[in-house]
Every structure is written in structure tokens, then in C-alpha cells.
Amino acid sequence: MKFELSWNTFGAEEIAALHRTIDSGRFTMGPQVAAFEAAFAQRFGVRHALMASSGSAANLLAVAALRYRRERPLQPGDEVIVPAIGWATTYAPLQQYGLRLRFVDVALDTLNLDVAQLEKALTPRTRMLVVVSILGNPAALEEIRAFCDRHDLIFLEDNCESLGAELNGRYAGTFGDLGTFSFFFSHQISTMEGGMLVTDDTELYQRACSLRAHGWTRDLPQPNQICAPRADDFFEAYRFILPGYNLRPLEFSGAVGLEQLKKLDRFLEARRRNAAYFVDRFGGRRDVIIQRENGCSSWFSFTLILRPELGDIRDRALNALRQADIEFRIITGGCFPCHEAIRYFDYDTLDNLPNARLAHERGFFVGNYPVDLRAKIDRLAEVLDQALSAP
Image (tube, rainbow, N blue to C red; front, side, top):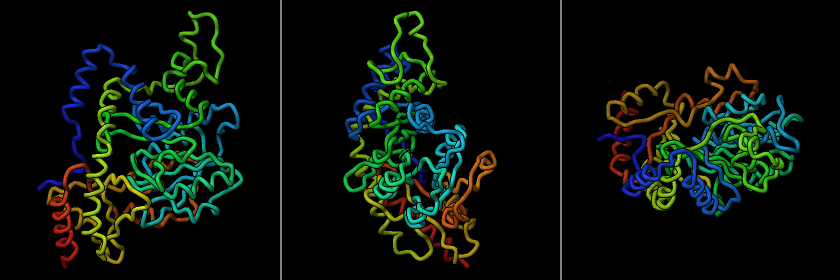
């Protein structure tokens, strides 16, 4: 019995949407993307939603918009507090804009940033806090929002793994000054490739609009807050005001996003049923640590960390999973300072990041997706029982 990391959630509705897009003759960003942005903003209760070519692109647009905003823009050398576990492109835009990273450890039970260490991490150079809700599990977003407000910090929320997660009735991804989402194949909904930036700040939204498409003015909503239009239409159509990118999504992605968004509640219900079964099977085990749910997780996957007292057992456990055709991978992107890319960053760490390193070295996750996984979870438990009890 194969236990896959991810599952294709496209049905007849998405296929029909793709065919309608082909028939329309409009393939690059257009009305389908705009309709998906509007539906997403309404669903998640935000003023602005801007689709990008990926969640990574959304992170880049968020940092770039903050760099070029009118008042108190981010400057090279400004310090950003970040969690030690995240995806590579949580951190890369910060490096690319000359920011200094200050890594803080995660809590071992939730795998999210340890908020008890925030006051110690703060320095006179701190300008922003970037928080990741790991694998569907909301971080301590209310405490982090209050901390940022208290210290006049920007709050950037990387919610790329946690679409649909909630904390006290509010959606993860909407607590920050900006939030980002991803719609990659394995995520809670998929647009093949694609991401979203959300914000209630109109200036940041409009700067991200310009940055998404070459830094020009053509896609700006009117009236806009960032530049006055000029009378000469010949030049106005190709007027570049920011050093931008081409991070536009395709119409295909917007079209299937509209269909996937309609199914989100059903997908989340199935993921949460699987999660309840997983927690029931693994929550009482003494050989692994599983993720403790904070708020209402959207359960991207199921994490397991082999307890240190088991000794050097990781390879045995992972080889058993391979032989049983159970797919797995490291938790998110692992502890980022453990990767070679860190040599290119200006950074420091609050301590040796013991929890993040433990998750990096002894942790992995298996898949969750909106089909009944009870038999596959049972098989996972059986394989680990045999592997971890062997002499």
C-alpha cells in the first residue's frame, strides 16, 4: 500500500475551467485571476488580495513593497526576527533586500516560533518580524501581533503552508500587515503554481501590483496612491516607477483557483478527519513527538520527530518507510541555518536553536490530503512499530 506525500484534487470542474480558458484565447493574467483575487479577499475578510506566480513570489512582493513604501521603508541593514524553521523563500527575499536575519528557535511541540524568546531577540535594529505557521498549524499570532504593535514592528505573516487555519475565529494569514499564501500542488488548494499576497494597506497593495508586473503603472487601480497619472498616453502605457519583476500568474491558475476555493471547506474537513485519526494513533506514543495543534490547524501534513533517547535510529526508521512505500520528507525546509545557503546571509541566532536542530536531524513528515487515510496511517504505525522495536 503506497502512502503518497500528496494527491491530485482536480476534478471535472477544474478540467472544464482549463478548457474554458483555452477557448477564451486569454492565457496570461486577466479576468479569471481578478475574479479569483476578489473571491479570495471576500472569503478571508481582507481588503486586498493579489495573486502571484507562486507563494515564493508573494513573499518577494511583500518584502519589496515594504522596501519601497513611502514612509519608513525597510533599509539594508535593518534587522528581522525570523523562526529557525521555514521554507527557503521565506528567508531569501530578506537577504536579497540586504536585511539582517535574527533566528529564533521554535517550540518543539508546535514547531512554530517560540514567542517566549521574542523579548530577548529584540534589538535597537529590529524593524520586522516574519512568522511562519508551520504545516497548517497557526503560530501564536495574537501574541505576535501584540508584540509587534508594542514595539512598532512590521508583521509579515508567511501562511503559505496553512491556508484555512484559524485562531480564535480569525484566519491565519490575516493577522499581519501582509500575509502570503501558496497554491502549490500539495497544498490545501492548488492552482498548479500560484500564490497570494493579502493586506488591508492600500499603498502596499498598489506597490505590490506594480512590482508584480515589471514595476510599471499599467496594472495599478485608479485612482492610485503611489503616482499621479500623466497626460501622454504613449508613455503612460509603458511607465516604470519601481524596479519590478514579472511575477504574474496565468489565467489557467486563476480559473482553477476559483473552482478549488469552492471545495476548500470539504477539503479541510477531510484533512481534519485524517488528523484526528493520526493524533489518536500516534499521540500517546513514547518514541515520537507529534505536532500539537494550536487553534484550528488546516493540517498540511503529519510530523513525527524521533525522540533523542532512542539513539541513532533515524536511518533504520526511514529505510523501513522506503521499503514500505511510505513517502516522507524533512519538516518544511528544516532548520534553515543548517543549510549551505546560510553562508550568503547576514544573520545571527539567539542561541544554538536546539529544538529546530532536533526537528531537522530527527524529524520528518508524511502526507495528508482530502481522502480517507485511515488504512495508510495504520500501515505507517505498523511499519514504525517494527522499525523502532527492532534490536
